[in-house]
Image (cartoon, rainbow, N blue to C red; front, side, top):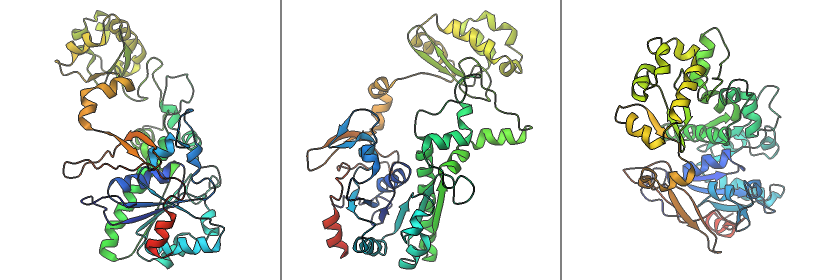
Length: 387
């Protein structure tokens, strides 16, 4: 049941999470890592659909690794939203909650009688968080709010990959994660405002809004330079706008990333005579990106990554070895962060997963409990809240 969150900023706050899949649950996970108690509302017949959203053929205790990763230490309260008795119990729980989160398609939450106006009437102090795919107005409102589809509509795919490659999606559910993080920020702000006014607020965001905000830097450039479309480098592109040498290059035994660096310095350090025509002509570092990168790639491929790091790092060149996950896990830099934890459940389910990215007063919070079984805490929650 309730975990020990003493000393964390949100200790004592109750979050009712009616969302599923990734965006809403990611938001409630962040709140949980800051001390909040999260009660996850699930259907009795199968629960959150992400329990069966598999990234691989790995399942733990009958549920997907995604579900476990994003719902650790939460409590599961099984509610049949078609049952008047269960709906009444949920409303009674909301009357005592501090935060509620939902990511139903627009219109669904109104039909359930659990929209902002209805819940505020039950509990004027509640902070109500909503995530949609594309907002509450416009022609895309009823389109599926799914990560890949939101990426497709956001323009972000044209920033990845090489020129001529076509749109390249991110290999992560960035729309879900960014929308969840944005909603968490808004909820925290609304909680601060509630401490002053005593009133709750409705905080809204969407996958598309989060992705547009994610692109604010390059999108602002586009909007103010004649609206020229971004042009990715045709060779080892890493950023649609930044000049050479910005990119990732193969070495004799791996890959090396080089960020913003004057070409003249690189030419001297690498002994790259072929870069002479570009040394003191900064304009060419963009207009001749591909040619410069091709020269760098040929030079860097001749020696190992460690060889080049031994030359570049003492010269304060912004560079890094490109690590894969096994290398990351074994690195002293990663181990020093203590970002992994093992969480368990009473039925012997055990999973190694990540910890909170936040530290308070120098300490990183951890939890011991794995994600719950469907309705695992229903009886205890009913007894505690008198539902």
